[in-house]
Length: 138
Image (cartoon, rainbow, N blue to C red):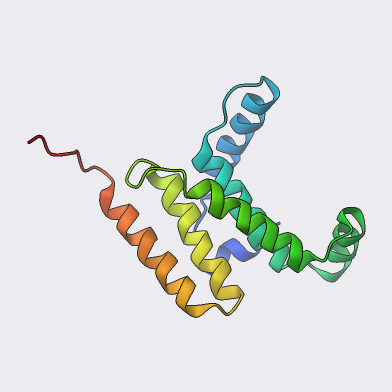
């Protein structure tokens, strides 16, 4: 849903790559292996953003199934992603971490929370600046 709709605002997620990662994530989950926290966080962010842009017919189905308004569901996904994302050491999450932080900025913007969106965008930029850097030896 999100990949075919909301993703095209900024094209944060490259669908073929994400589809492969998502498939591997489900295989790991089924086999009881530890799940990658960055990818899990990215999946939660995608769910949070997707819940913001549901077509009316799908919104009705999801709200009936979860007994929860889509907006509240979006907030829950986002809050879970915030908690999980805070456990990732800065500079260690790679591109997936950057994507999930950028999706956080997208989510905040969609909620008209401009200051939080700006800060999330800054965090995504800082995270991107860390790619390829090696810690200095004293």
